[in-house]
Length: 437
Ligand SMILES: Cc1ncc(COP(=O)(O)O)c(C=O)c1O
Image 1: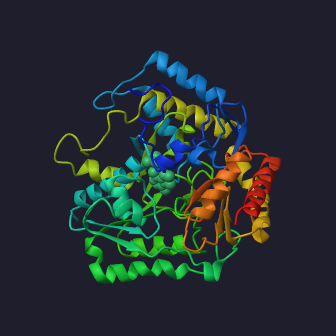
Image 2: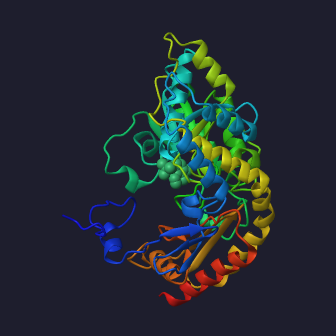
Image 3: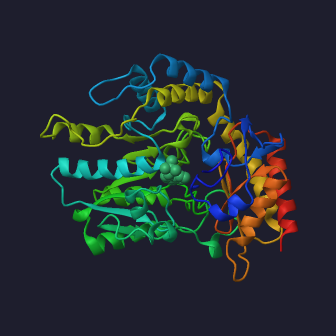
């Protein structure tokens, strides 16, 4: 029998289990922008958890809302029954979403949001008499979580290759990362709007009458902070409209102020038909995700249903009372503390800080937008990803949590971060890079 403190039983997600368990890094408490290790050491959270603790850790208003909700109504199904918080939260989300994207379906994660969005797109096409539009178009290097729909449209080989044929009828746009032309771009890179034109070739190959939807992350996070080239998302929108294809923005990391606007759709002034969200929706204090669909999609599916239930989809904990309470308190916190505006104000300082690493050892590119940063390292010959992993461990030992993906260091601090803490991140990374070969 394992002892309670044994690390054996927990099969850790997206973690080298053997290496971690041989040399674990644990945190036991968090407050504001810091985690605390068992020995009390503070670790600056340079990644807002996993892009999710936007308002910082342990916010008393959110904690109190969850405690109240748990004591009042611990659970109610939203199948044929309702709890007020779920309706209130949907209205509150609709208030900050782009106009007309105001029909909210609750999930429990970003992965479920991606699969839900794809299913809503297919249901919509069928409802309007276009069931032949069944293809789903993702993008190379895209990440839409780990469920079957998400990995099918996603573009990360290791997340896909093990799992068989996945969802049929999927194709992929090329990714937009072009380091030869765009290295060290500040904000949106100049080159690459034409990557969107690949959709024309996909349409030429399959015909638009077979294509339901295109799904992209406005800024791709998980494959190393890929900022869309200037005009790219607008071009994609135009092409989707031209060919009667739905456009889905996966805003699981860009939603809730990361770019200094509520959603990337507003930041880029491009309105998709569906937006997925999760993570910061509750400041990650309770797991939750959601999908916002346009009124047109919702009305079409409802109007054409041939059974009382219009969409055969949902989760036991869709719109869980604790998650909705946490979500409402989170939106209150964002609003009352002006955190989206704060992110916009800090963005220029963040950009300068990130790009000050240009002359640090091993750095071959730096990218930034809003409060997102990516620093790409030259891979160590014959040992890709090792250099970044070593940098990650060194930074942690020096009291800063960063994220690595491949040979890219990714940064997404809580929106409450202070300038001196931004400096601490940059100084720590510079120090770590100087110590590794
Ligand atoms: C763009 C995007 N979509 C979906 C997901 C999956 O979210 P979750 O891990 O909550 O399932 C993520 C997670 O990082 C993400 O970045």
